[in-house]
Image (cartoon, rainbow, N blue to C red; front, side, top):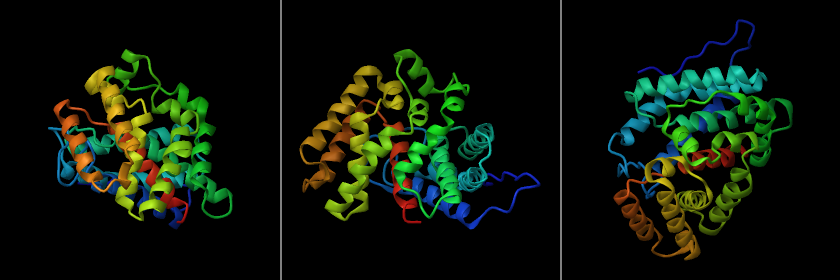
Length: 287
């Protein structure tokens, strides 16, 4: 199994230590999302969630294949290449993921969103002083707004079919707007939960449930339609209103929500991708 190896132009400098560092943080963030448990409907080291075609091993094979991608896109961002070049890297990374997983989509959303955030973090580091804030990284992605909105979409992906069927915006619109869900909702939620619990896993679960409660998750729409999305959002909002991870029995409550998701085959994969992005934004502020 080979990781993505994308050659640089002949005139490019060797990939910087900063690009390698950001690449490691990106992979670490995806691994943290996988390892976080319990997570309703999602794959963890202990459960397939609502999935029959993948498990933790599938995700690990994907992560191994994507190692080079995040370093390459960090270098590309640092070099301020055109958006089309970033897109080419993402397409190659998606192909590598599918080869590694036997055609199973584990990280398509993360290749897109986390890749853009890594590129933007690298660009800001090269042009500014030190590590940028997570908010600055999110807002910086909007510099590619026109290219993002004009780029062709894969009409055959389940998420895009759900997007068309239900006439709702997707993550592309979030990216074009500078990821307001991340910098205005997810990051503050993560920081508050970390401060309150001093527990990274609990803070990640709180952030995930907040994202499920507020995100039009195309994976939920694809699997459960509007009723499935509404059910998942209702469950997440109820958990948060009852105290979230500051409840003594929060793990049992999440496990019960997970049982309900699995009975309905619901999997909030879009929210999981945004959780990994949030964790990356948090880590890169101090890297």
